[in-house]
Length: 100
Image (cartoon, one colour):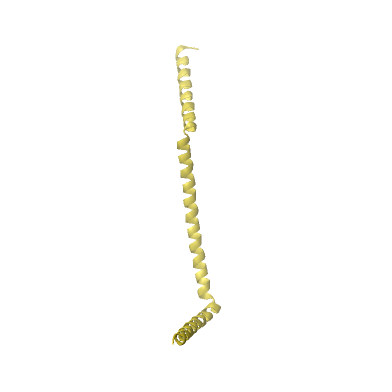
C-alpha cells in the first residue's frame, strides 16, 4: 500500500468511527430518547382524541337524525310533556291544600 492509500484508509476509518461514536452517543442519551418517546405517545394520543371526537360527532348526528325520524318518539313527546304538566299542577294543588 502506498502512503496516499493508507491516508485514505485512515480517513475512512475515522469517518466510520465518528459515525459509530454518534450512534453510541444517541443511544446513551436517555433523556433525549425519553423525550422523543413521550412526543411520539403524545402525538398518538392526540390522533386518537381527534378520531374519538369525530366518531362521537358522527354518532350524535346519526342518533339525532333517527330520533327526529322516529314517529313513535314524535307522538310520545307531547304526551310526556302533558303528563309532566299534570304532575306539576297536581303537586302544587296538593302542597297548597296541606299548607292551608
